Length: 545
Image 1: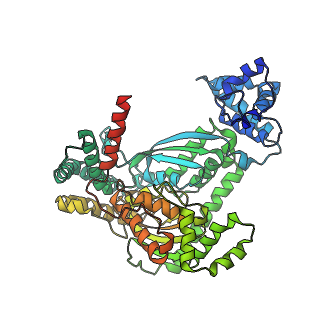
Image 2: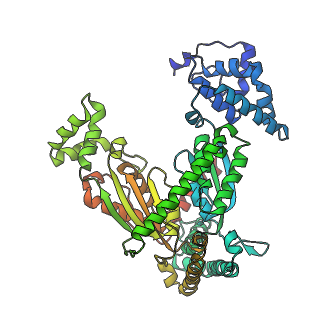
Image 3: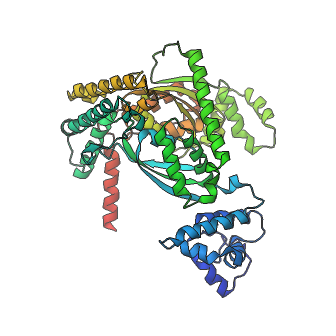
């Protein structure tokens, strides 16, 4: 850092340093961070940064802090106060931001400011709508593995009472069906936990804390299939303004009233944090875009039913590799060599076709090197080829895998048409009958409501029922996905999907997955036990400090 420390040559007076100090992490180094600034000010500051030969600190001083028209002291000072002036300050910041951005493209600049937002007490239908956003949004949802979902408020289970259903003749049936699901879930927790613990006794090397956590997680994993899509959950989101703006448009185009209302509520809160970044979602442009998405989806659905409505769904295995590139090996080898030469890509591809298989394997092995951890992932050459899978699995597994964002996933509607999954452990514990009875009652209610309210009926579908979805991912993501989701601590349902994906890719491209060393093909009684034991070790180390 000796040379780069001299990069910032603009000198600061003592007074200027005092003005800047609250807003930057250092005053004299070439790498520094911003702090104590509203997101809208950060966005405006970076937009000016891209079109100036000044350093960022000098821009902050001259064009923000010292500029009378910026009213910087008011904007920054009032944001810290928890009073009515805060909204006024944000509005002031927004007006300033708009003045600064005259002549700038809004889209890229809107990625420079972000916000944290919590969405509490929303259904799993709404949660998945939020988590459909891939880039620019980082979601975190309440876990069904660590949190039991049987708490009541004012004597009622916490599930979404869908307005159109509650206003229909199906209201009583809807509530009684969902109550039955939650009653069954609650009633089975204690006997199933006892059975799990009886089958997996604690040994002397395992702490009571780790054992209790692992067996409880196993129990809740086995019973999550009873939870319906109406189950209320909490989702925390961090995202940049551009991503939030697009999300709001998509939410406005939803077929579900809850999701549309959620979008309006999010808009209201984001307007208080990053207003300039999300304002277009509520303009005529945003409304027109939402109508475009909604209309196209509706017309495409009608056309699909017209063309395919008479066909019957064919049964299939949980994972089917439906498309891959037969020239994948050559393309990847060419991509490996490309950065290290000045030749055209076509020349390299032509050369690679003349190589023997052992020569190609040697290039691949050299490129990957010695992987001592699954975190040692192949480089971008492995993005040169893609695989498309058709997956049919329980909704619980889908919810877990849905969070992967660097790939394409498209699901069909939540339904009961493909049947449900019964964990083998429930059979062995002789607790399967109430489990199946509750699921089948939900299917009957779903079929009944679907005749009148097909979209709303999806709220009744329990996680145990299967959903079909398409996954398209490149080989680099296959490494990450398969090695992560096959690991011991994962849920058995999605571990089976990751394991099968690995087997099918290996069958067509063995040389490309030969270095996928961290795929776990074993089965375990307590998936979370080793993870809990690692927590014990960390706790012990922390206590020794």
